[in-house]
Image (tube, rainbow over all chains, first blue to last red):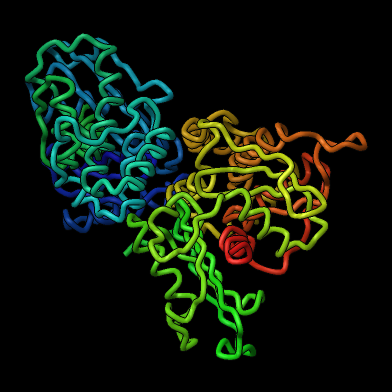
Length: 258
Length: 293
């Protein structure tokens, strides 16, 4: 049986296809609020092409993500937490905690041995938009996302920006530019501040084991961010390949299981 | 490559009629802002050429590039310009400027030139700062207010939002006005909250059942920006006469002045009609600097 999972994120829609439970294809589409359904079709098309399948082959489709109800052709919707938990368990059976860090939301879950959710915490308002913020700062500083990922760590005594608020952080960034601080150093400071904000979500749960925390979401691809987050939280994350497809993978697995 | 909806087009213009070689005095004003940079070149006090670009990550480079862009194809070289004045957030980096001038003064002077002598209230809607300036009848600033920290970054926020929603930045203002009635604004406190709330509108039952349109979502966000600007204007010293909130001879300057979704809502709430200007309102700072040196 072919099952599809579609994660309707704030910035990107991700699609994953499973053939009898084995990953068969992945696709991505730029979402942007109102146009999520067309983005979902583009993402699914990409996944079908990779898998060498056609839309008629799909037995069941499950949607998740912020725009999960926008998808008219989904058979079922599941919340982001449930999809993330399912994906984490599939990618790392020993996982006891999951963090999903995306464009707008950061979600942290703790899991019991069977993969059931114990605790689920979403970022508070001021820690929203961390992924979007870093992308916005990259644009402003004329750095590509690859360059953002390759940033050096923040040096001791180096530049810092406000780590409580993205509005203040942007002003600090502009002050640092005025002081001729190198762009990469400023970007590293912004990345570190983003990591601190994400840590506020981790602090709201009791992490059962610091070596079995799975990191999903688009921010998992940003190596500089992950390093900053590990330094700030003391956690050594399990980072699966294609972590940004975590929600979609979880949804596809749920389509298979139910 | 995906389209960069947030990236507004730069501009450049040079007079075809005037000949700079005949001018007695050539001056230039350069405004290196947090988000955009402008240069205006005057020949004997008349606007001869101008340009507007994205500031980018290097203020010094932006300062040189914007002047080069303004005088490109005119045959004029940097050395032909008699005096240069700089202003704006990155003005310290305009190494070729003979004088650095205060932004409020430059915007007031520039607005007078754009909107004529009658303008009394100048509202500068920049990338980061929002300034409300009250002028005397003559060219002097009577009072001015700047946004507090939480109301910063209005222009930049529109850029970010357009990138996220994939709506061309030149169109979002007009689109937001195509609504029969303005919906409630999203958070009027902070744009980080407003962004999340705006994206959340797309998930609301009203939106999903087509009772709320895309344009109403944009309207909700533009209204929240207008609201924050109104907070700055409201702190200006009220005029001496009449039961009015501001001197109604009002002119907008800055990049967001070109977004009617913001300006029309401010006009509506204040009960005024903004003056129509002779030049691109984004040039006000650079123009003022060029006039003041």
